[in-house]
Length: 342
Image 1 (cartoon, one colour):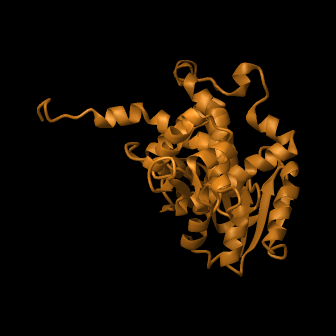
Image 2 (tube, rainbow, N blue to C red):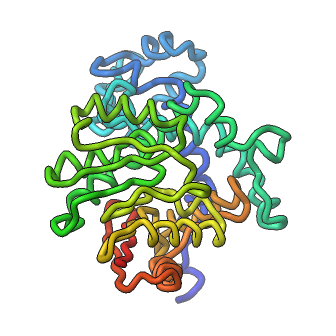
């Protein structure tokens, strides 16, 4: 291909993509989609409610229109802005399918930490709060219940679509019990129990999380089918079950700790049981899943030695722990369930 046929547009689009990202993240943090709800407001009306300077109003809201995150009826100062169906469903805080919590976290924390990616690449060290002499994210969160609940809510929004897909796609017919390790609000257990009435589930997490999980399980009306158990998965044995699930858990740790969790799962599983890891699983050739690879770089930023992995990596580690059979089930977007059978 001659140089006249080559085009730099993809390079430039990616290079400038932080502009678009910051506009969306700021819109969520400012509450644009929640303020609009089901109303139609002029730029001046919406800007006044959000306390924006008049200079910023048209550019900011029209950028969101051009990016297809807001709708607009008409042109000029009298035009009215409104939520798109996706914005109303996923970005209005009052929606049961709100995913904005993770976007607020991206804006408040990770946007600035990713500025130090070059240092992470040179040092292999985390670039988060720890670098600045503060407590690590988990230590900070688990010491502050309201903050912890907010964080778990953010992760719930991010996880829901994958847990729903897992509940639909995995064959639960041969199993009676499931334990979700690092169960947070109990969401995975809730989604599985709603669809498979023969299953009994356990949501396992640290003691601080237990009251939060109990509240969500009770709200779903599933207390008779889902119980909570608390402990530290690096110090305590895991509850016995036919299926053990880990949703976005393994990638938080280095290889030694990953292997500890895999071996603990093997010990807790019944013969024929299954370990399921739900992640943005990197493709085996490491050429396709951009989100999975970027997530692994994010683990470098957050924890230093933690990393994401491929289905082939999971198969190798689980094989070393004694598991006999493996499969990968695609869930939603960049995410999959890696399954190992005992």
